[in-house]
Length: 68
Image (cartoon, rainbow, N blue to C red; front, side, top):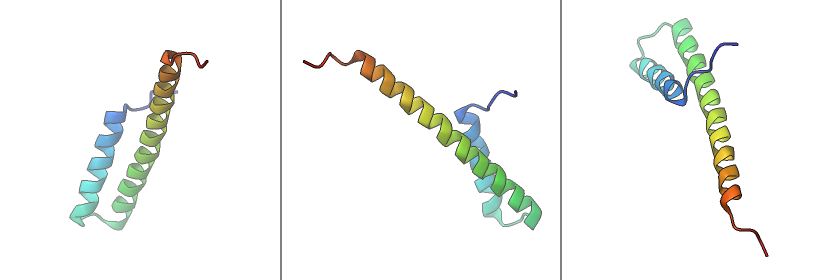
């Protein structure tokens, strides 16, 4: 299985897709392809962020003092 791009790479892909779409110079097929690539990266970035948040919550729970 191919390694998933880093969160930073995902953000770069999203930014590039937005910049390309904002120019309005793309053919319809290319615009759709850029939109799809950007949307895929948004979903992957969100999944990565969700995993990071879950891990941080685990770490915080491990550090919490025991409840009396």
